[in-house]
Amino acid sequence: MGSVRAGAAVAGVMTSMLALAACSSPAAQDVVPRQLSVGECIDFGSYVTSANGAVGGDGTSSLPQVDCGEAHDGEVYAVSTATDDVFDSDALIAEVDTLCYDSFDEYVGTPFADSSLYYSIVYPTGSTWNQGDRMLACVLVAKQQTTGSLKGSGL
Image (cartoon, rainbow, N blue to C red; front, top):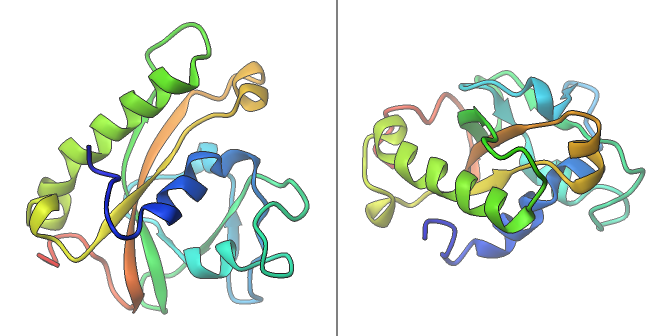
């Protein structure tokens, strides 16, 4: 569905986001994934390239949030709660991918197939699920740093 695109490697990184490390710049504020909300901008590039160029570093579960007026390459555009009662990563991936694909056009202002943006998914790991985490989130990812919101951008 929606996460199949030239940037799908990044989407694969985001699928296990809750178990990955974050390294933020002094200007960034870490946001715990369970607190993500629509419209938050993320410096995803610094997150992916942290910890000596590898993702995973210290095992924290946060993303570097930045003011949307500052350079960034990610923006949360949909958030939901998992509907299943039992952890099933395949079902979670399908549920969040559907959410992201279906929410894309309304938020960006152009259909996913016609957009220069792609999206990445965030869902609980088995460990965070056992701690009560049920958050599903969709993050727009731009190929280059941008300033301002991507909402209604038509990109």
